[in-house]
Image 1 (cartoon, rainbow, N blue to C red):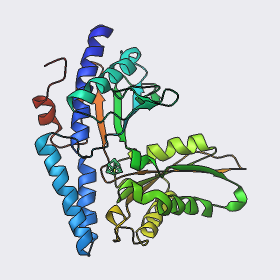
Image 2 (cartoon, rainbow, N blue to C red):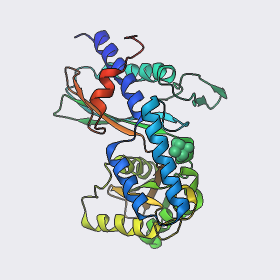
Image 3 (tube, rainbow, N blue to C red):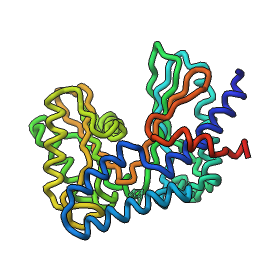
Image 4 (tube, helix red, strand yellow):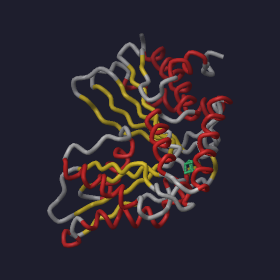
Length: 310
Ligand code: SF4
């Protein structure tokens, strides 16, 4: 297969996949929302969760996005150095976003800073946003598609502390972020915490943290214990779904970390909303693919058509 053919297949598959990820929540998020609902005791909270689930059912049935804010597309890519079509991926995925904007449809959200004009097709300056990780001995491609909505991006924060502030500064940063603007992100939240040595790598790690499958823990037992302690603490704040007073503010807290300079403690905090549209698709080198995040993915992909196929 030459690059042009590969680009068409990638674009067409990704356009349909964006449709799937906009209209469905991943299985692990749905299961976690069920768990959260069961822990709520007051009538307002139960009504809100019922509204969430009705909305999600209708989105599936009507094949419409499950939130009006379909965000900006972010792609987290893990690509094998031997994947044969590396050179056409960005072009193919941008084309998929452009087409999905009209076929799904996605809300036209992208504005370039210095033109102050909506681009109209969700492709703009460095948007879709690509984050790359290269795996030396592999020939496949994993794409995590994430819909970065306005409300859930708003609370995000990254700060560098002095060592004398201690590791307590990590806890303070998480609680300040969630208590300040967390309710703008439609709780219950997934809180990603990145610990690094400057604000850039802490911020990147915080994003990587909330893209992890729910229920997984940091590999270090102390970090895993901190994840649980932060979640328990946040859930004692009485925030609840939509900030309307309940037992669950955070579905999960996930931490990712890197080494740090002895002189810095850098903390990034990123939150994701209840409509956590994070879908994973894995392409083999022949562009066959699997989608592990939704149980009905195969059926959806079989029954939907890309712009090219229509
Ligand atoms: S925070 Fe999430 S659920 Fe709420 S409006 Fe934004 S994208 Fe939608």
